[in-house]
Amino acid sequence: MRNKQLLAVVAVVGLLLVGGVVAVVTLGGGDGPAPLSLDDGTTSTTAGAGAGTTEEDSSPDGPWRLTDRSQAGYRVLEDRLGGVQNIEAVGRTNQVEGGFTVDGTTVTDVRAEVDVASITSDSSLRDGRFAGSIMDTAQFPTATFEADTVDLGTVPATGTTAKVTVPGTLTLKGQSRPVTVELEVRRGAAEIEILGSIPVVFADYGIETPQPPGLKVRDEGTVEFLLVAVPAA
Image (cartoon, rainbow, N blue to C red; front, side):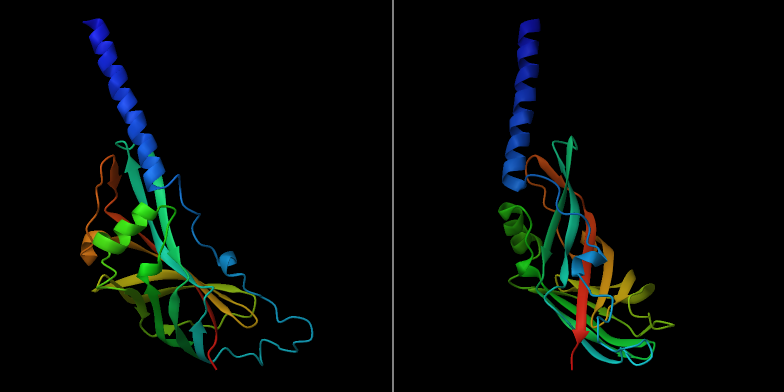
């Protein structure tokens, strides 16, 4: 009897190990990249030799557009084998369009539109589910963040970083919800970087949480973004 029980335990452990290996191989081999930082945008924070600009004569007023050095995506935890192994799944894209307008200390027309179908991770299987049943990118190809009029209080000097709280609207899978996001804004000589993240409860946006065998995906995650803008004119 004891031998049979021992064999049963060994069999269960073996199945768990095999399941774990299969999950790692098919769903991605490990944690995704670290959270985005302002350094990922490689902004020049100085005017440069011979530029001849000063804080007084380099007003950021006017329209700004987002460049392809912008990034946006998701971050969510996957619990594998009942939580024995936790993987931080991360998907990103640089297919981000939009911009904003600066007028003194006021910023208006803030909009960032993300091509959701182009978001990829380290797992093609995960990406297929994400673009299909999870986000239905055929019907809802884009996600957007739009901000209300923002008062900066003071315009950051070139080479400095400021923090600002921004109310706005996040739209995922056709569902729009009001959000408030804490942004870090760094002003460079010819660029502006904007870093932020927004916690998301999937059910609030009609997003179903997938539960494939051997894996439990958390029902909440984070939308993260780094926007790199240059003058539109």
